[in-house]
Length: 126
Ligand code: THU
Image 1 (cartoon, rainbow, N blue to C red):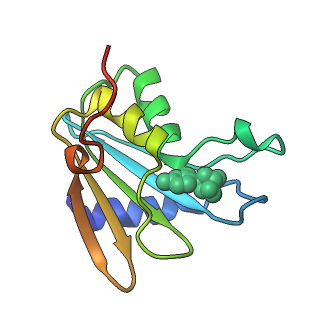
Image 2: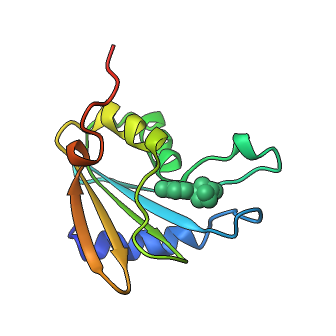
């Protein structure tokens, strides 16, 4: 699946976002090394800290289905420009994505790709 297809799927996933508090809908699509894909959206809660980002929704769905080797994640939001993953999501991704990349899209900038290593150069490791 190419980057444009991943972005399209992420835009579709963002439609399911539950974001009544921030009104900031995010969609993510995780591509596994074996070719399978998992989608995610942000799911907010009235107790704000209980909210979950789109990226972690996708990661947790994938891991709970037995996947542990990811090569790429595409992320889009319905508002705003390029939506970079938050620090917690970068750390969570680093657990299962050693040499992977982050694919982003905005109308203004088009598709951009970054290495996870450049976005999280010194992630925590036990
Ligand atoms: N959010 C994501 O889902 N992913 C990101 O990369 C950034 C932020 C969500 C969390 C919250 O539901 C809303 O966007 C506003 O922060």
